[in-house]
Image 1 (cartoon, rainbow, N blue to C red):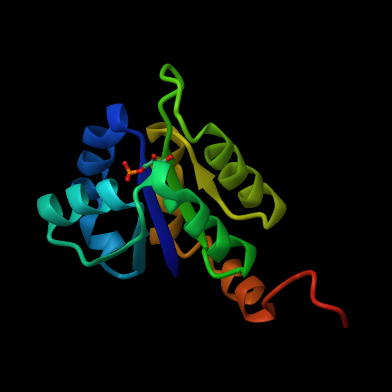
Image 2 (image 1 turned 180 degrees about the vertical axis):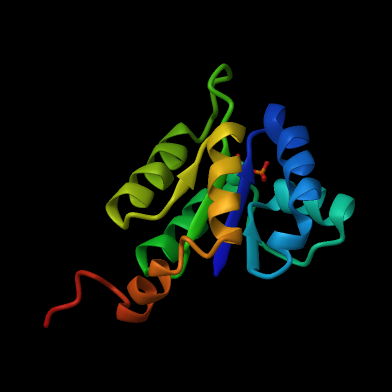
Length: 140
Ligand SMILES: O=C(CO)COP(=O)(O)O
């Protein structure tokens, strides 16, 4: 499955700890991340991650484009609800696209724990059917 890992600055330590704890599960999937989050996780876990731009420079939108093409199966987005982000519209757009395409989205550690355990148990295999169908808005 294709998995996106994203964290706002004050949540980066949390996502690194999460990635260390669940490294063996994450390693079985194709990983994507926004720029700085990806660098931190790669450095501290050794996982291989495709990095996009940093969030404020368009990384959230790049991941959003994959979601809109049904190419992202799970999103871990550790948001900081207490700090204003300069790219708040991009953050909202990414969350919105997850809802449009029914992509499982964890915005905090509590939900992330449930989703990663679901991944381990193969609970998200229905995503394979969705992504094989491709763009749900395609005619016919
Ligand atoms: O800003 C972000 C998500 O909105 C994350 O971007 P970075 O991983 O580049 O810090």
